[in-house]
Image (cartoon, rainbow, N blue to C red; front, side):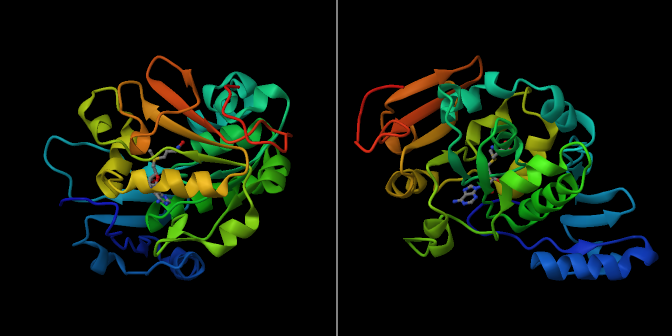
Length: 281
Ligand SMILES: C[S@@+](CC[C@H](N)C(=O)[O-])C[C@H]1O[C@@H](n2cnc3c(N)ncnc32)[C@H](O)[C@@H]1O
């Protein structure tokens, strides 16, 4: 299979548990995805499997050397739960890059939401966050996990108040900015498109490998920068691997640098100011 993010393969919802059949059909319908029976699912590369433990993305026909476990996304259990409850908060580089350290809590569009880790960090730090994802199966995992988190007694209150999962799709619909997103009026836009070389390092996390297989390289990512700059009122932040070229070849205003990544900041104006500025934060 040659994955590409531009053709978005349809991944159906299925279940191996007869008692969950009607729940799986309802979930598929609510999320705008097809449903299929286990027999129909056999031949497919990817399925979204609903079980008693939740929804998971299963890569069924992996090459011999690959051994990727099903991908289940949760903000209330496992690694991500730890991050949300005890994690760095304001210290996280993504949070500093978006500008929360200045004491402002911007309204952020995470326009390449993926597995929602960065978006949830921003919401945890106090930002109002809209998550936008175009790959329908990734969107399904993300929406399912956010809905679960909204019902959680420890983190449900802030997740409900600050996090919205937008209907799946892109900031750009047929060359124009999507109307519902223009109306949402983000102050900052965060971009973290898939970068091709990520898959070549051994350090790539397993869940990201799975995502990469499904989504491929976001080869149209350069087009997101001018669109984001037109829409964000204050700044656009782009996450890149440390050695990657600038998105769309455009030099940022300033940067937040970590060991593996770089956050390129494109600042239109300082938070709270009415004037456009090109100075650094
Ligand atoms: C590297 S992942 C993002 C990871 C995310 N920052 C996180 O913390 O989990 C990139 C994601 O962006 C999505 N994507 C790429 N281009 C997009 C676009 N134009 N609109 C919406 N989603 C997009 C891809 O489908 C993929 O799921």
